[in-house]
Amino acid sequence: QTQERLKAIDSQTDQFNAFRQLRQQSKETTQALDQAQQEVTQLALRMKEAQGPTKALKRDLDAAERQVAELAQEMKA
Image 1 (spheres, rainbow, N blue to C red):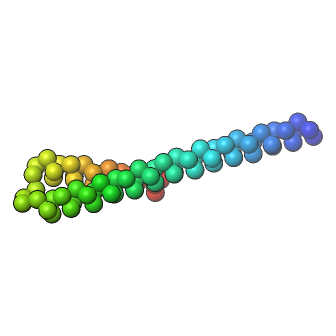
Image 2 (image 1 turned 180 degrees about the horizontal axis):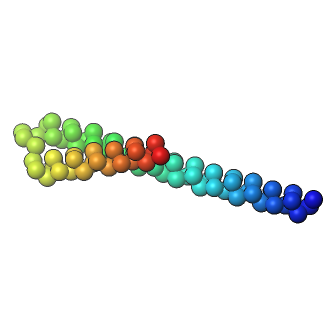
Image 3 (image 1 turned 120 degrees about the vertical axis):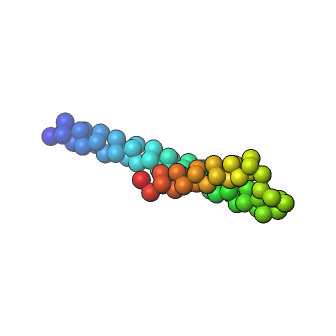
């Protein structure tokens, strides 16, 4: 009886620790997504203000947009 109870408590502890880790990972991914979205916004503004978008600026914007898409997909998983 006691052994079964201890196993149940250990299992619950493991589940709780896994949840805490998942919650922390989710928080980090959310922060990274927010930062990537801000970068996309800033790059888009720089492109708009530029006489004509440079190749480097366009490349940076494309990379930032890909990062946002990847992080958004990770959040859905």
